[in-house]
Length: 73
Image 1: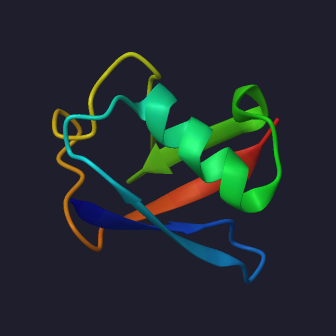
Image 2 (image 1 turned 90 degrees about the vertical axis):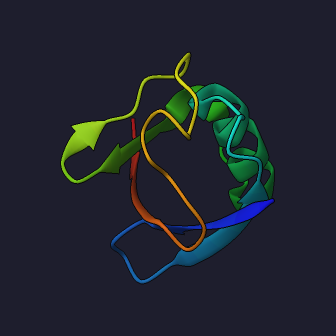
C-alpha cells in the first residue's frame, strides 16, 4: 500500500492510499470519491506528462509520497 499526494495547485492537497499495481483509471476513481469530482473530469500529471488511464502507477514510477498534479477538464 502506498500513499500518493495529489496537489490541485489551488492550495488543496489530498493524500490517497492505493496499490502500486492499480491503474491510473482506478486511482482516479478513488481520488474522485475523496474530492467529489467525476473521474472522467480529472487529469493527472507527473513531471509535466499526462498519465494515461490504462497504465499502472508502477509503470509511471509512482511510489509512496509521490506528488502528482491535478487538473480539471
